[in-house]
Length: 244
Length: 307
Image (cartoon, rainbow over all chains, first blue to last red; front, side, top):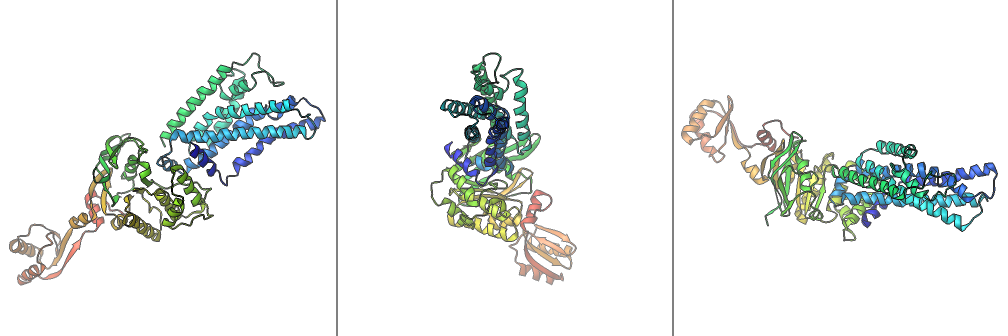
């Protein structure tokens, strides 16, 4: 498995897009900086700034879309250039192959959210919008790590779609639908969609200002939702890869 | 243990209602080059995929290194190198980088395995040219380099000369022969190019519409393959009468009103010519002929020739 992950890194040589996509981690911190700079406010509550910079659109839209695109990139070459047969006869196990891709997604997701955390602190503390405190920095770091880990698991269905397709159009479209679907479903039931379940886990203490659920989130149900989707995704990916 | 590195018994593959491979009994001997010849769509690739467990077997069995293969038999893969269909590699990487990935995945122990494999196929080591910029010939060479990277005993090459120019084909042929002669590799190679197989293979299997029509060594095939004496004479009916009466000949055929084919090549042609001339039958020409492999292919497939 370690070998597979190592080779995943080698395969990314000279690929610019995954690195360029990391810049998206700074999009919301930058917008939050612009917003508070425009208002001319100083000494803003760090949680308010971080809600905008890391715990809002980044969690619900930007990160899932970025991870969906990355899933497609990771699967594309081997599907498009008919390389899977060569890998199978090495031999590489089909599930090992799938999990090595997932591990890359997980690492990328955590890295992306760490960059978001760094960007949030930089864009808030350096211009003096927020007064630095270790407490708020750790809070942000903790939430970003949670989002990074959970979102990777929440994106397993997209990775499975990417594994089953030769092209990139369907996985990318599926990513967009999948990300926005979590928004719609959230108002009906938090535990139908892995991304809304992720939000329920991250916001479990109702400690993000302006983002709160009416009741206490049901954590076991949220984890169950992510697990069930994850298991089904692995099963689908295994079937799809067996056909190739 | 049997003498065969690959042996299939009644190997059959059915896709829906179409039988792609029908009860094929293939025997690949150790240290030899086995050429699997057939038109496009004859079932060659399907057989190779079944040998690797990349396609399920409908019925029959495959034995590789004496082991019955059911599904993906991972234990035999390290002993086999292969190109199945067009070899694909990562376009953003160089040839060396691509091979390094496969070497790592295989756990290839030799530190200079990649360099050696590239040298054998005549590709530069640590070259900066990306795979996406490779010519078709270079891609095929890289495919072979990948197949021999871990120094396997058995090579399975599915149409390795596909898309190559004549010089590339000749180089590839020479290279495959060298692998067999100098390194003792057993090679199963498929092709739809008859001349290619004729020049390369020690043993040949001819497959058509999923059925293995013929399997023999090239030597045997050449021997039994349509050797005859073509005789052009002025009077065919009279000549046949003389041949039947004087030489007891039964195996002949009349091609046209002045040509005969005599299938007993051990005949004393000097005596035949003399007898015919004495009976006032002019002998316009007589020559020992061999059917080409293409003629033979046509004959046994009962249809069109092959490239």
